[in-house]
Image: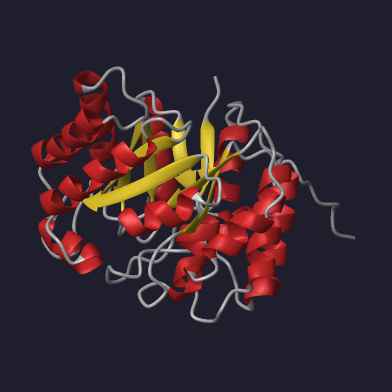
Length: 302
């Protein structure tokens, strides 16, 4: 059995940092993730710097990274201008995002959910003849911080709209860490039944401490694509209390302990997470980076 981990730290992680993160740190982080064997790295976002200033150097980051044929480099794009800018810097994948809940979508994108989806139609036309994947993200798929529960039928409608446009995959995002394992199992089982040919990614936050439990719940229902963020950095700047992406180190460690292959060098990830603490100047929530692997035994005290 194998799972596929996308690291979203260079985008979803760095975007929420209070202090500026240098371009050098971003490039070094992506290169380190590449060497560690990550199959996909969400490297940056082509967004207006007024709204997400940490992503102002998106073009330079994409131009400076050392690419590998074994890693795909994804970027987040919110509008046609972002797509145009991104295409000049050789992304392998464009990630789109729309919220299943109207209130969160207005907070995030200042438009309604279905207005945003209509805008996305132009993006698909722009890249239809190019060897670039488009993955449609559904934010607040497991709950909205303003509205509470989000109906599964609403999530399915958004998925259907993406697939009509030609999306290559769908990401279901627990944007503010509201999901629980039973809910995740129900959702993954339902989407697998309704959309059996579709590649689904799961994106969890650990805001309320259920991140890895939700990953495992999804895995039990057959999910094999998961997002995580190196060191556990990140969160959504447009949702109250949405800190805490699940940590790539902890996620990979859990799967390795279960005997599930990831193709990722866990020791390299641990080293990167520890280096990032110094680079960012604050503690990171990664548990395995602090405690070491389960297999890292200690000598008996004298």
